[in-house]
Length: 232
Image 1 (cartoon, one colour):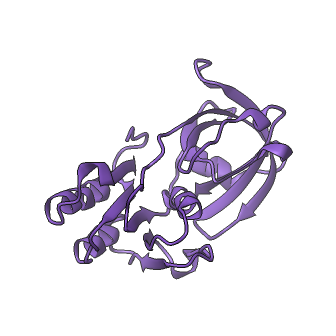
Image 2: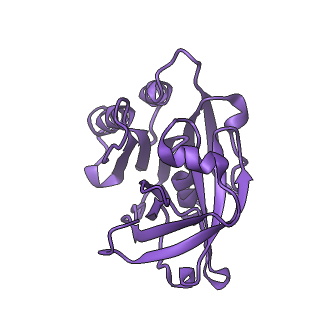
């Protein structure tokens, strides 16, 4: 199912847990998952299904002792992985390859800005859970329905903003417009992920209008309007 140039792990589904109408958590187990080297937030693997399709997903949780991982998948489109996740059941087989992904650095930041849509929410939450205490964190998440927000970690200094997109709004536009109108505190480091155009607009705004150093702005286009297999 996957290119063998990366470490691969044969897995099966052990649990399917709906989180919201747009997001479902699939728990996988495999005999070698204890060896999966998850070392920092936002690391991702390629998930491949028997039908021959694969996509990149963040590892939401890794429990090496139990040989388990959780991956949260968005159900908002008609892609092959979304269709598979919508009907996945315990016992279904798949394969993981990786992990990949660099650690975003927030060293020395006086404030952390996280901006995401539904596709990037799992990765954003891994950052929230990893940041040292005492750093103020502002989390902006664009969602398609008021019920698609998730409970946030109990973390001092965390402020969550759930931005509910109207049906007529283009995905990503509400997140971009909100950040363009938001004051950015001095000493901010930012992490942005989601629809590629929206991420690029916010990145440019932070670099030019707020003069954040490039090394303080981490950005990733997870998907792009009109592209079925965007390579961010």
